[in-house]
Length: 419
Image (cartoon, rainbow, N blue to C red; front, side, top):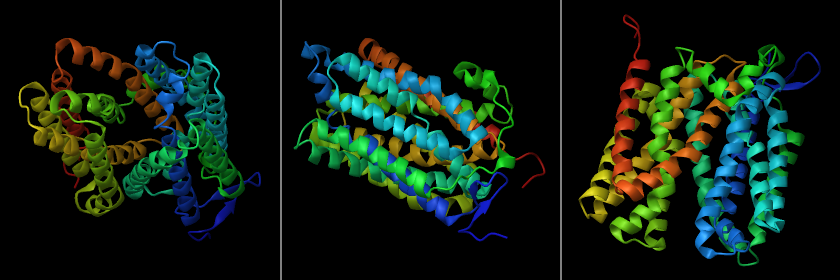
C-alpha cells in the first residue's frame, strides 16, 4: 500500500507516482509556474527584436502576426501527436522533450540574424508545445475526477501569477539588452527540463497506457473529427470552442478597442489588465475551490457563461453606441474574469468523460482546436472590426456564447431520476 507521497515501482522498473501524490502535485505546480513565467518573460521585447530585422517599420504588425501564426500553426499540427505519445509512453518524456525543444527555439530567437530565423524559431517552439497536454494528462492521472476542476483552476491561477511575474522580469532584463529576456527564457526552459529529469516521477501507470498509436488520431483534423464523433465529448468540445472564439479576439484586440473607444493609452490598459489578472488568480486559485463542492462543475460553467455573455454584451454596447469608459472597463473585467473559472470547470468535465489512456489525446485535441482559433480568429475578427465596425465582432461573440450556453446546459444536465 502506498501513501500520498509514495511512488510505486511498476513492471519494467519505472517509478510511477501514486494517485493523489502530494509530491507529484507540488512538482507539476512548480513546473507550470516556471513554464508560464518563462513564456511571458519575452512578451515585452518580442516586437522590438522583430523590429531589428524589419526594413519598413509599417510592416512590423504584419511580421508579428506572421510569427504568432507560425507558432499557432505548428502547435495545431503537433498537438495530437504529442498528446497521443504521452498516452502511449507517459507524460514525463513528452514534458522533457517540450521544454528542451522550447529552449532551443528561444535560443534561435535570441541570436536571430534575420526574419526567417525568427520564423524558424517560432516553428520550433510550436513543434515543442507539448508541455500543456502533458501537464493536463499528469494532473488527470494523479487527481480523482471530483477534484480535477479545482486543480485545473489552481493551475490557471498559477499561470495568472506567472503572467504578472514574467513580464516584470522581462522588462527589467530588457534594460540589459533586448536579447536578455529571450535567453533567460531559454534558461528557464532548460531548468524545467532538468527538474523533470531529476525529480519528477512518471504519472501514467503502464496498465493505463494506450496499447497502440492510431495513425488517424495523429492527424489534427482527423483527431478533432474523431473526438467530435463521440457523443459524450461532442457538446463539451463544441461549447468550449464557441466560448474560445470571442475570448481569443478579446485577447488580441482589447488594447485597440480601448484606444478607439475610450482613448486609453498603455498606462490605463496595463492597470486594467492587472486588475483582470488579480481577479483571475482569486477566482481560479480560491473561489473555485469553494464553489465546486456547493454548485458543482455544471454550476460553475453556467454561471461563468452567463457572466461572459453579460460582459460581451457590455463590450458590444460600448463599442457600438455608448461612449462610456466605465461600461467598457466593467465589461472587460467581467468578461475576462469569468473565462478562467469556466475553462477550468470544462476541463474537469471533459477529463472525466475520457479514459485514463486518453487524457493526453484529449489535451492534444483541445490544444489543436485552441491553436486553430488563434490562427483564424484574430485575422477574421480584425477584418470584421475594420470593415463592419468595432462592435460587430462582439455581437457575433455574444451569439457564440449564447449558443455555447444552451449546448453546455443540455450536455451537463443530469439524466432523469439521477440527482
